[in-house]
Image (tube, rainbow over all chains, first blue to last red; front, side):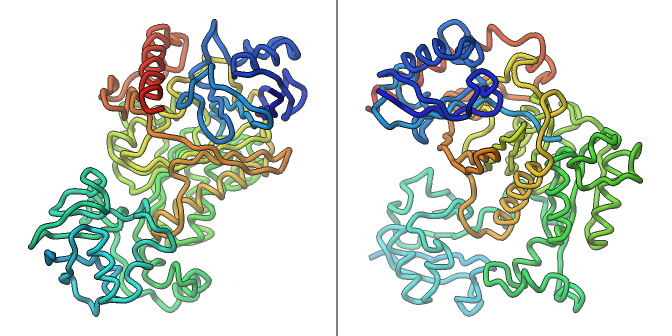
Length: 90
Length: 392
């Protein structure tokens, strides 16, 4: 499955772009694919085999925590957003 | 069919010829509201707007019990029941009405000053008075706090509280429009007060020149109707979130970094920052504005959205950002939103909370980035997955 992945400026350091293409039939596979293309990608958002608690992944507009988490299945044309908490205000 | 009495709150009484209590027939709440609308055309529009669901700012009670805890608008009624339709923010449980400002008729100068508000049907003189009777606390007089404070001052908010212990530095002046060259070295809260009152002398400004901590946050936040977060660190964000939860204060949250902004609204009982981000990143993992930078104008965009949201809540108009996280990407010049939910397993506002009082937020966000925390979260994840599976 080919999906579009949107990242914030922080992850852009790793991907070079804010919108990248990835492949996979699940979120896990997608993240592995992106980590292959952009070494260090997973390390930014995961610890061991689970997502950091300050990072949320959205399939279209739904948080994957309320779907099937990393096993959430993807279909062609889905849009994924990866969003870390931001603390900046000043 | 049962006949019930319906309590009409002040803002809606112009429709009912100033009657506070009316009678209507109906087997359930929806039928009663429809019958009130028949007697007083326009009532439904006033309460529901154009939508079909009870909007966030309206609570409906049957015999003093809120209907979302009963059967919603399908709640069955019996003869003699009392139905009350209450705009949530007009003197809810957290307020101390005696301590609130009461604004009588607007002066000629005020009518002039606020005329562009007053001529809007969504505001009018009564809406402008609501703004002038409201109090708002702004956490941080920096990038976000600046545009928030300026627009709220111009709008005529009755009392604005500013929490900031820092002093103005020249590096702030690339974006913090509350402060100017002559203010360098001044306490930010003091500089903020001067700017606000230069814009609008009617606004009462309270300065809190202290770091907000677990020791003072209940006392400070307790003095205001609405809280706007423009803090610059995770510890303050979790502290403000938790305090707002305990005090049942609406929290308008915004954060910025580089070219990105996030904004949402947490209304009491509808989820919180911990539902969205259960724990903070380990120190250094997500940089601050000081470390990574921030586009000055981004502060204006995000802060102005926060100011807009608080004004909507005060006026009781429109659809707030509750349940939605607005994402602003200035590089792509794109605004999107994602759904956010109240997490039933939230350690603060979930069904079985483990955080029942304020904690040590520096430790929570600092070196002790928690293994126990991660363990708890794994358990919560498993429970959430199980729940999702049974619902599917």
